Length: 151
Image (cartoon, rainbow, N blue to C red; front, top):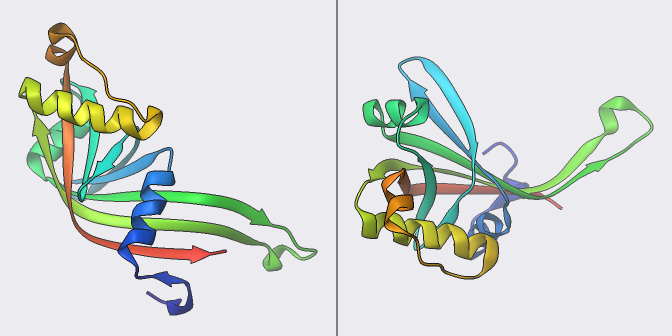
């Protein structure tokens, strides 16, 4: 990291940034072609959970290459200045790398959906079997994380 003075090394601070984020951006690589998609998500025990339809480009890519990069950010604020090159941005961010897997079992889907729902509502829910049959849950096991801030 170029700006060591902005580095976050405390895992609990990085996890608080993840939990405070509204959107996770998932970067995938299809051969030499990058693909980034914003996702709703939930985080628990070093894993990120996202839901998806049963088919689509992101699932096709994950099946070929499960290595992913995730980006989370909070506390975004433009710092204005008189001169263009003096503008700045306040932020707290985390970049996480890991391996994605596609959950297709009903119990695994329900668990992942509840992690997502807990993230946004603080509650867990029951999911009808017909809902679970129409979706998959993507689980990313985080292997490494870095954090950075300008506050």
